[in-house]
Length: 249
Image 1: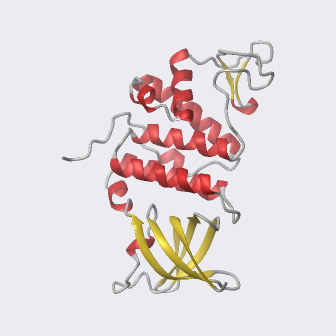
Image 2: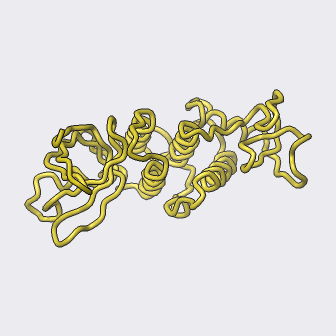
Image 3: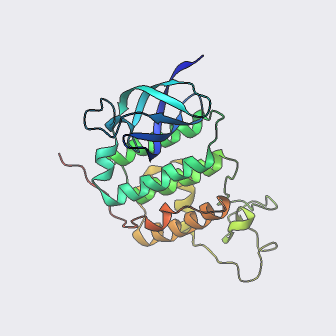
């Protein structure tokens, strides 16, 4: 089919020529797609604003030999303005879309698509602290990609926990018998928060203390950077404020 439609979230854009852009999107049914949006940088463009990062749209594509072409875009979720208005949310969202870009390819991944859209929606609505939302997204996205961390049972032997020795390279907490010398130990509060972020237990996550959130974020960042190998450029810019954005009434 030379023409197809799909729901998509915009991951990133690059300028092409004087008026065009190359848009990288994560779609619901077609995986990651790179397509040309012609004329979107002109002020008269009908759908330029619908193809900015963090936006979710119903997009029509025309298949090309190397790059597809975007011929229509209708907004489904307008999250860009709310996210970019708050620095903490913007940096968190930037790390999310970069992660999605690295974890997904052309093969469809409905779970990854739904997870990213849900996380961006939550950021835009200010449902939880941006750092909590980001850390939960990272843990769950890595789990879907096959790198689920263990925060209770030993990641090496499967010995029932709780265990406190955490080794990024081994996949999470490990028993004392297999923990390398000098392995850092995590307190129960940090392990509890990490488990809550992985499972989506927001009552526990929202009730956590700032210090606990900070320690958990360090673990999530280290785990993410290790498994993505080249790391995330956006992660170093994330605003680690532990306050929750409150939407105006």
